[in-house]
Length: 231
Image (tube, rainbow, N blue to C red; front, side):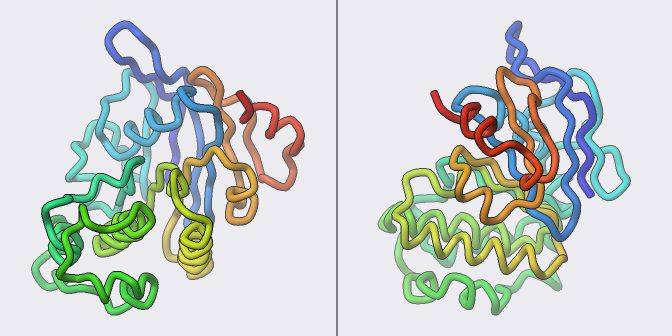
């Protein structure tokens, strides 16, 4: 389980997170919801180690990891799919996938067969450059690259952003499959309530750097949640 307890995060003098807490258990999708600019991505950056927290703690599988660099967290099974995908446009699909080997011991540096079962389109494009793929295909590549690392915590930052509906359905299918295996915790940042409702067991709703609602998603007032997501 991931346990985030009362964390603060600053960018210079500006405070982006205030006493934020959440838990993300294995075998469940935990969704972070909120409008643009409320601190969702900052929270993910804190969890994966891309920005240092000023207070509070981050515990993964019983170990405090708040002071560890990103590569150490990745070695401990934390894998991230950032907003905007961040694939390498000049590398081929094959090479992009193989960058996921970096945190693995030599004996595990091979492509899991299931990658192409989950994303069959990628098998047909192994020799194509990442920058030549459509936005939806790049998103599938980014998720596949994260899965190559054999994560136990998968962090997804708005995977539906700018993606066509057919590929959104494919991504939802993959997340559902991974969730139902019960082998990993999945932390999902979203703006779209309907997508989150389909997948998540619990939710954290943020506003202005703080958690304003949290709990099992089905117990939260849907109207209240939707009001907090609209501009």
